[in-house]
Amino acid sequence: MKMNIAVLPGDGIGPEIVAQALNVTEAICKKFGHELTYKQALVGACAIDECGNPYPDETHELCMQSDAVLFGAIGSPKYDNNPSAKIRPEQGLLSMRKKLGLYANIRPVTTFESLIHKSPLRTDIVKGTDLMCIRELTGGIYFGRPQGRSEDNNTAYDTCVYTREEIERIVHLAYKYAMQRRKKLTVVDKANVLCTSRLWREVAQKIEKQYPEVTTEYMFVDNAAMQLIQWPGRFDVVVTENMFGDILTDEASVITGSLGMLPSASVGIYTSVFEPIHGSYPQAAGKNIANPIATILSAALMFEYAFNLPNEGKLIRKAVDASIEAGIVTEDLAKDGKTYSTSEVGEWITNYVNNYQL
Image (cartoon, rainbow, N blue to C red):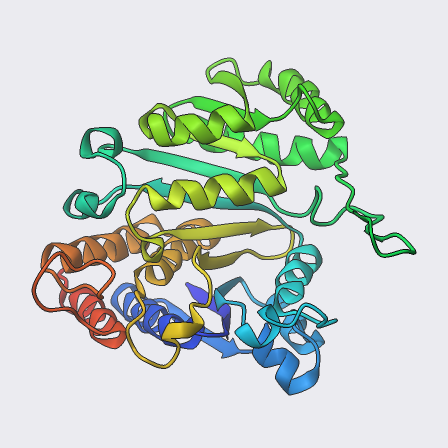
């Protein structure tokens, strides 16, 4: 198969972790006989510094011409610590989502047996957790207009807007994944308070009838946040709106014990983006200590979702599992003994793929 991907390393640790995921991707393509072509482009703070735009037109054109996008992270203290900055790296991420039609973020949350000790929750609570969060990405309060401040600058306002079409699209996608898994869907909203949530529930209740094999439940977001910590194993597929999803997915990520372990896929109208869920971690940038596994697993999702190549994704997961079992991990995962650098972990996983007998 011919595979053409855009590579957007971004800011902070982005270039380091993306480099390792790209090495694994190249090894997989060589192993399975795929033809890989890729080109890198700027996004985020580095793009602002270079051309004044966090998501340059050239980057967008590259993404539009690619089968998939492998993305690192966005963010820089240079802009985080400047509340008066008119252009911010995160605007590039929002712009990319909007222009590429990235309407759904898919985050699988699973535990690794050998890493359960890293979770802040008790083993009996965490063990066996296997859920998928599906977050709507292009609507809601992050994109609602109008927004701004009053003339006296003492009042600020944002608006939360959703259309029936946006909700239908994401709910149908959630049911699709629920059908492929354990056939249980949790729709999270705040329908007792918010008008947009009442529209979410109305639309979901109509769509529910089209999927009688799936058990559907409706849950207020505050209750969902609580149950996610008390009983994560009760969830299978969770679908929710943009801001609720932003908060709940970060909460869910902690269950595994490290942000550096979880990948994500943002499904789009034109192409899809595959990225780790963590941020740019600027404190570690250039130190070769960041965990590359979430980005490497994002490459596994890319093979599975963008190219429908499940065996390739399975081999990446097998290599990651083997590295963890062998103790070849960065400092955030180490229980005791030696820790390994970003490049050492990536090289070990790449070598595992190269030496694996199909």
